[in-house]
Structures are given as C-alpha cells and as structure tokens.
Image (cartoon, rainbow, N blue to C red; front, side):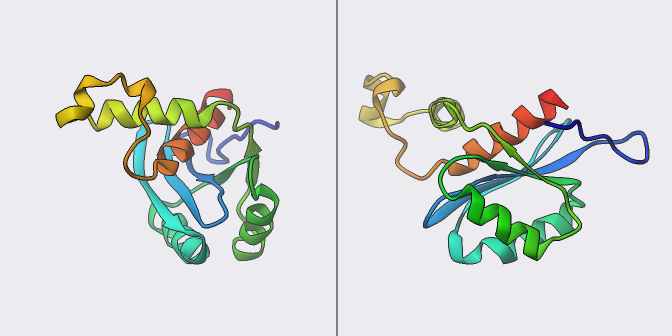
Length: 142
C-alpha cells in the first residue's frame, strides 16, 4: 500500500473508514487526533451520507475494508467522489476487536453484567466500530 502524504506537508490527515455490508455499513471519520464521527447507516443512504461527511470534515482519503461487498463500495465511491483517493484495508479480526471496543464504551447493565462480554453479542449493530478500526489501521501504517 502506498503511503498517503498531505500535500501541504502538515496538519491532520482525516480519513473516512467504511465497513461495507449488504444491507448496512459502518462509517467513521477519523484523524490522527481521534474519532470525529461514527455511525451505522443503511446501504441505500450510503452515497449521500458519505458525500456529506467528506464535505463536512474535509476528508483527505476513504478507507474501505476488503471484506463483503468491498468491490461494489469501491466502484460506488469512485463514481461519487472521483477525485478522492480510496484504499482497501485488511479486515482480518476487525469484528472481534470492534465487539471488545463496543463493550468498553457501553458497559453491560442488569443481567448482562454477570456474563463475560466475550460471550455476548452487542444488542445493536457495531459496524461503526469496525470502520474506526479500519481507519486507524490505515493511519498507523501511513
């Protein structure tokens, strides 16, 4: 993978991470300074939401997980944002890592406190956490 270098020689690099999926996907805007935004969105809203985030946060690059549907997402992004660089990132073990992060941010309550989080599935989608991890992986290698 080629390194991404800011043309102005400084400042924060802002990337939009995408965890592609058939019906929903996770997106996250991440910089070397931290997480700026993250959410789970429907596949139907994907193009509009990504365009809005790119504009709102002045995104430098889009990072797409190389798993399910990544080729479709890559083509869709290239058509919608032809001047923005797009890079694929390995998705290996991101779901497990995302699940762990989810439970750090959302401590189990009630009866869920009694079970180890490694034995639980979060009660809501956590694809946005996967998108954060993908973006962070890219930023760490750049």
